Length: 142
Image (tube, rainbow, N blue to C red):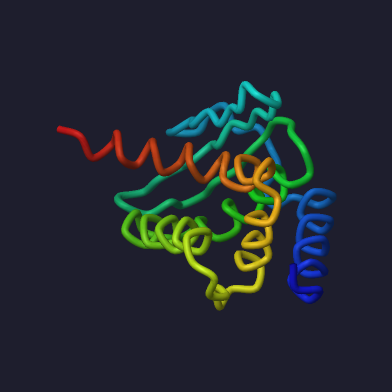
């Protein structure tokens, strides 16, 4: 793995696992989404408040490894204030990043591209992202 990417990966994970964004239970939230990995026990709950088609606020709480916690923190940071269409585009870009070898222009997201080098950590890097993606897909069903 490229040394610069490795340092970025470690720095982003350290920052967001020690000081996660919007790490707070919000049981009164409009929407609650469970993210659970039965293989390792990582478990988070996303709490969303929406207004129309905009994610007005998003918080999370739970426990997991540093990678899954940091990844969820970044998800929360990037989704808040975005429209559902923008959230879907962000999710697409995030998952596409793992499929190709091109750097993502957003340094925080690009840091998780390094997870490709650690196959056992891919689920950690995508846990909450997958749960939000699944919820959005189910939401679109008639």
